[in-house]
Image 1 (cartoon, rainbow, N blue to C red):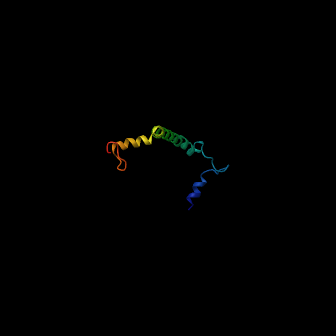
Image 2: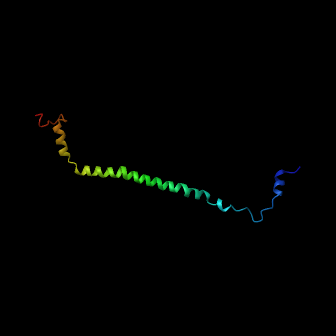
Amino acid sequence: MSNPITTAVGKYPALANGPLAKPDGMKGALLKSVRASVLPSVAVCLGVYGVTMYATFFRRKAKIDTYMKNLDPDAMFEEIKEYGAFKSVKASWQE
């Protein structure tokens, strides 16, 4: 009885020039897949992130900076004092 592996190998010609080369469609298939799917996805995500940062953070930061630049703490204290919010400092109408 013969070995089935050697019988199957014997049916095919020997590789004269070494192992077979990979087909052209197989070389760099993973890299092509990454370039085709992951890189555009990353670009879209970065674009959405940038638009979101501009829409939420930077515009709000500009408004807060303007508010803080125009803020007068002494005038604010006097206004709150006139409402009678402080127990330690009496308003003009409480005296």
